[in-house]
Amino acid sequence: MSNVTKGAAEMGLQVDDASVEFNATKRMNPLGFEDLAYTLNIRSAESPEKLQALFERATTDGTATNALLEGLIPEGNLNIQGSNK
Image (cartoon, rainbow, N blue to C red; front, side, top):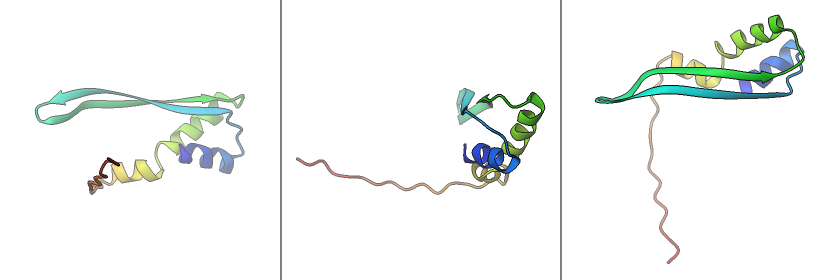
């Protein structure tokens, strides 16, 4: 969401609220997703044209977006914390 708020500020747009919804179809073998789709929900009085420009900017240039598009493979770590018994 930082790319939405950053983009809105740089474009001089007022965004009252923003959220993202993800939908995917899970694949069991091999584990993964068949498809992945997202919807950016924006509450704003700005014109649809300006919000479309913000959407295009926010969904083509951002930290997570760029990592996915560049095929960055995350490194995983396990941190086990014992109980306080």
